[in-house]
Structures are given as C-alpha cells and as structure tokens.
Length: 50
Image (cartoon, rainbow, N blue to C red; front, side, top):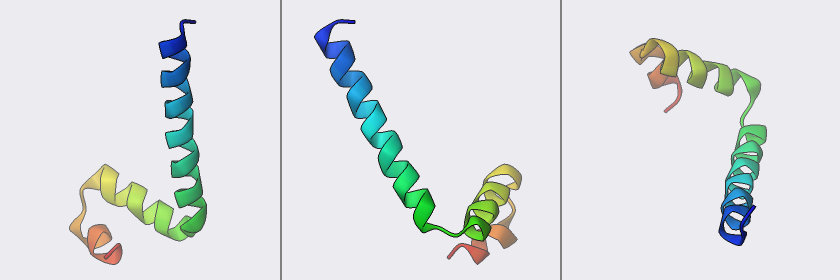
C-alpha cells in the first residue's frame, strides 16, 4: 500500500472507532429504535428518538 492509502485507511479506522464509542454510549433499546426508524421511515420511532 502506498503512504496515502495507509493514511486513508487509518482515518477510516479512526472514524469507525469514534462511531463504536458513540454506539456504546447509547442503550441497545435506543439503537434498536434508531434502526427501526431508519428502516421503516416510521415517524413514531423518530419521535421516540428526540
């Protein structure tokens, strides 16, 4: 891999780690509702996430 590709992969990994940390801070229930709301586009689930 070239240097720029390595750096790009590192930044992608860092973003992934940041997202992981944010998800750990949410309860599994919230994550489930977020997933349901995203999949169904259901306004009821979106309201629960406010």
